[in-house]
Image 1 (tube, one colour):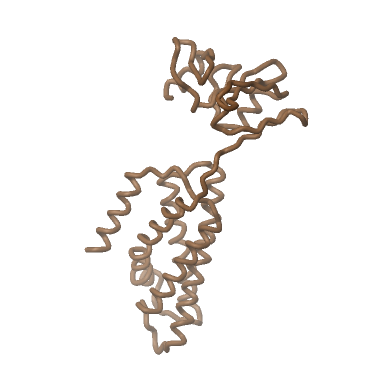
Image 2 (image 1 turned 135 degrees about the horizontal axis):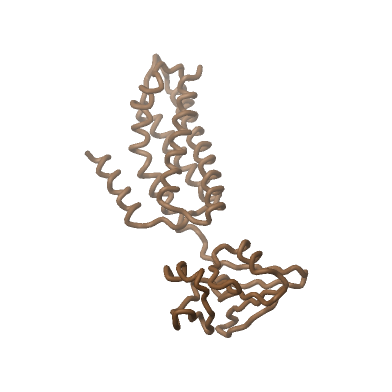
Length: 264
């Protein structure tokens, strides 16, 4: 009764607390992998989930080391998988988090069953029996630990501000600023005019580029007019049906882009 109750508890936490971030640090996930491998060693050595023939103490040590190494390598693969996905999407979600568990347990099942069937252990369970007798127990007992160490890894992320570097066609056309300071970018013939805050003072800079290129480089920007992109975080209110108020400035809104603005 205890394990099912625990499973329900931590999954309810998942759905009460939306996941938006992931710690992509391979260093931190290497530590998590090491903790999982230690757990697998202890679980295998002390619980001895199978006993085929005569396996003395030395043999069980080597068997446990093998399962431990498999767990470490498997989580290493999962770390690379999630880092790749996070780099592509720029965000994290419940479904992506659950996919980590699916990938981990799938790979661990395949790799560990191969080890179990090898000459080292010479196991006689078939795959289905192996899954029922060993892997299901591993899933039920390891998942709570995996959940809590992954959530704790978010706390290890250093606080840092996002910076943007906007570059024009000329080498001298470079502007680096905090993402939170960028207000909007407007078309100015062969240039774009970047409006931003500098110590709470509105400033602007022209660089030789196009609005289309800026939009493709920074997909968080929202188009409100064929000549204007805005940073949604600086949207304040509607002045009237065709004008919006941003931080320290106003911009016109085209009819074609009004619908997505209404969701802000």
